[in-house]
Length: 426
Image (cartoon, rainbow, N blue to C red; front, top):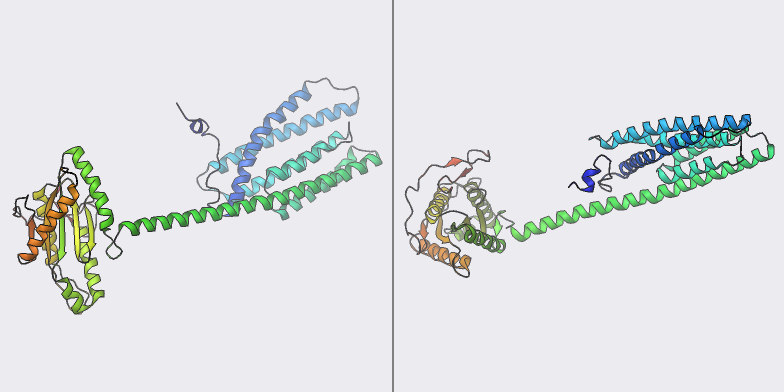
């Protein structure tokens, strides 16, 4: 079944208030209110036209003129309200918001109904000294539409001048004429006062909504930054060791669900202290950042690269058997060894030692077991002369052949210096 919102998708609904300027929020509000006002008032106009058209006229000529005037006035307003309805709907539904059209729409609606009140009150003087239609129009426009106080002053002044000028056409008693004009002045003042008060109140509300939306965006940005800081190494941009254990646990759960295995690689830069001592820590930091870039360029999107701390890195290869994991480690080792770190006083070469271990779903803490095995393999690589790959005792102990399989360009469309491992695809 369709939801209520889907069933009423024809109607325009307010969205994103407080996320734009106050002026745009005012215009959108006015367009929405004109739409709902016109939608509600058209049946009222038509009902009044029908009621007067089918009722028996009175015996006097004044009564006949009054009835015809009421019918004509409401018929004209019904047509105008339909035009306002269609215009408001178009403005609210178009993809690019037209602020100028919304301003004109609100102004036309305000003046139209103020003049409607003037016309109806003038016609009513044929049968009654009351000026209720004008009072209702002044109050309704003040409450329904948000008009700037300066513009509202002009609208109400213009309506009042028309009211004072037209009332004598149908009200010939000096005493009643004076009373009606005074009441018209009071109605105009009440309408203008309400308009100013509601304008100030609503625009203040829009400002608060805008500030709240801005604060929300700032908080979201701060939270995103904090989440990034909590999960990433600030120097290299890789994951840090805090988050990798959680991600590794997720991978273990996937392994237990699918039966696939994964591989874990520990990398440690050889003699990195010599680079810091010789060239300084800023150069050492740049080398670490470039090593991290090389590691990322050789991995699939699903692989996880981590800086464990200092010059030690970890790579977690999901859905990768141990043999393919060893090939991946060998590719990382050879790529780093063959890379000249330029941009310094002279090119710097550096090597790395790697330990590789499988990650399975067996045991109570597979991640800890795999990390320990990879760490022991890394220690053997260091002890055996560095710049080499060693496999955990549970593995084959040898680098599967061929380790020199060609690299293929990454599917991400990056430059040719960025590659993914062709042999680690499973």
